[in-house]
Length: 460
Image 1 (spheres, rainbow, N blue to C red):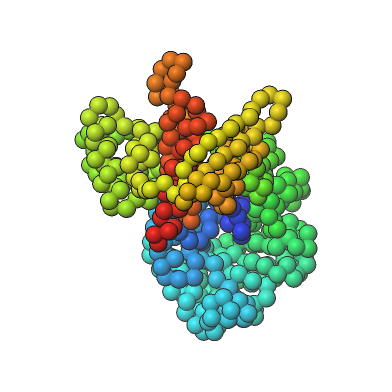
Image 2 (cartoon, helix red, strand yellow; image 1 turned 120 degrees about the horizontal axis):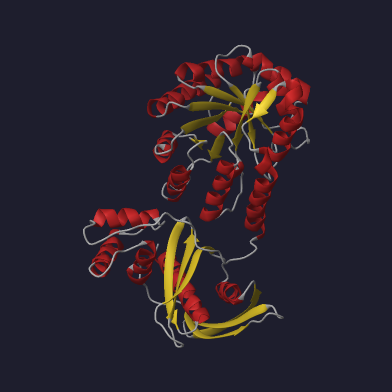
């Protein structure tokens, strides 16, 4: 029985607007499904993207985590650093091999491209044993050059190669013949990736597997080989053709639906309110150093200046003298003392309408430079409506990374505390608010975070 490896590239889809937590949730679902490889895109923001990969590495224990290395020496180093803590790390060298791709993407002639393939694969191999060379636009490459590129990559240390049919210009039987011509003459596994613009990606992949391909790159909800369709195809005809995958078929439909739900929410921006993420709990006390606290703050997703790190540590010591500090306390400290700025927007008034037979609505009045502006919006609940009304006034939608509420005093007149985390341009900003009205606390916390973003943008 031939075991086909599944490498899922859902998190690499172009133009995706996934939040940090949505990416984490997709990775969790793929891990539960037992895909062989979870592919991550090239690192663009060295802080947030690296944090994402390291977070995924903390709970993905069975699947290989494959990170694209990019086109520069720096991007290769970034990928190696990010994936270094994974149980099964892989570096993915994706380079164009067609004449047009080499010229316009990398600005390199064939001989220079061969030298670059050798250099990048060798550099990755020095730090990571598992290196995959991916030939982008392979079906439009000159065949002699393609074989030289593959031989060069294998000689430099690549343990797997992948052939991409980006243009979808070959019919399934022709693509299979193309793959066979390569697979019969190399000593490493050959994987395939096909564009589905003609609706034949799965057919091309299955025929490629029949003639020698070892793995298939799939996605959920994208114009490529469908994970659900391909896995279902192998389940249905695997016995006849002696194919199998490690996918948990009993979980396939349910898991794909959950991932699609995440994709649809990201695409439609269904709601700005999200629930707290399952971040691994942090426990600190007065014996922890400033470096320990700074690392914990970075784990929560904050990128602070040296000045703000000092402020956070001073406040941490004050709190730690009385009690242990967990992730919630640390987030409250960051929200309270880090990046405190003048209030560009000030809350004048708010009116919330909510009930079980009406849609929640909010009317918010904010003041800026002495001028008052009103925003009126309907939302999925009173807090969502209030946040949308604020966004209407500001004229910008910020990604809400987290929203937490808790009581800080007891009794009927209890004070409520709200913590809001907004992500903007890859950076996390937190705000807190306190009020006897929890909606009011949420509004103040949201404005607190917005004012930090606006102030920092104005001073750049």
